[in-house]
Image 1 (tube, rainbow, N blue to C red):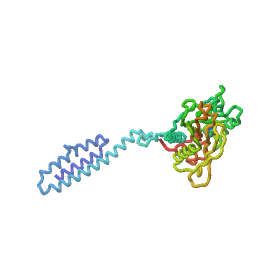
Image 2 (tube, rainbow, N blue to C red; image 1 turned 120 degrees about the vertical axis):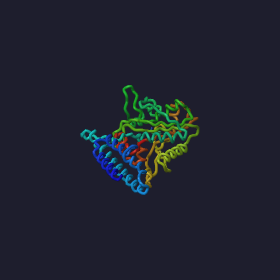
Image 3 (tube, helix red, strand yellow; image 1 turned 60 degrees about the vertical axis):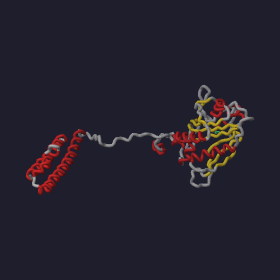
Image 4 (cartoon, rainbow, N blue to C red; image 1 turned 90 degrees about the vertical axis):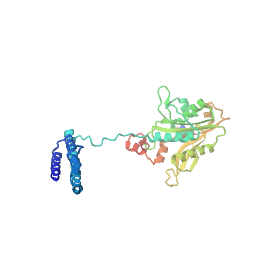
Length: 335
Ligand code: PHE
């Protein structure tokens, strides 16, 4: 029986070595190791041997089986790579190479901060509104207490359309639109794009983003303004911040302020940074919105969104927002 085993092993190995493709190899496997394969049958015929010889011979057959299985696995791998090379046709195209990664893009940091602000202010009872980017002179200027003769118009030079309308210079027109539409009491924010005739540099853009905030009720005071601004900044910057108000002039607020933030980058420096203009809504503006200034008071603020993102991430050039450089944009995470 040992001779028989040796002969089977020799033939099996020879057949495995000379099999020319994967199918031939499978046939070899089945004829030696399959249910009716020669090695299988040999093992089954073990009973014909004297009892004391069975264990030793059984071991031999099993070892032969394992070796043959290993050889078949090796050959199978070889044949597969030969088949692959043939399929490639020698033109260098390799379908097993990882492909180009599909890029999923990310939300622009201005979009991200807008969404965050909307969430924070909705928590404070504000509704988000939108106004048109092409605006009437009335809402952009006159209703905001900026008549045609007012010098404030010079600082807000913009792009005028031939029909007398203009690209809005700020989101403040939404104040009056919201008053007209919803009346008082009112809590509204209005994020959006604004335009000015600016010489572009690291801190000025002709196209920029603001978020207007307006709260009108009975007995609204500067205390309400401070509370809302502190709450907003704590949420957005992720820490408690010190703020201060300095007098600032805008025709549509009285009194008007510049709100400064202390230690703007959270690095421990003892410095104030001007963050946003705000103030108590001017009686003329309330009137323009159809509200009685004897009955209603309110505060308003105008948050520059680029500026806020720049503070949060330490960005130094405002032009990066619209520069289209993916290396810049990708830093704000995939969404
Ligand atoms: N609209 C003003 C600007 O763009 C900012 C502002 C808004 C000031 C609300 C006060 C109150 O310059």
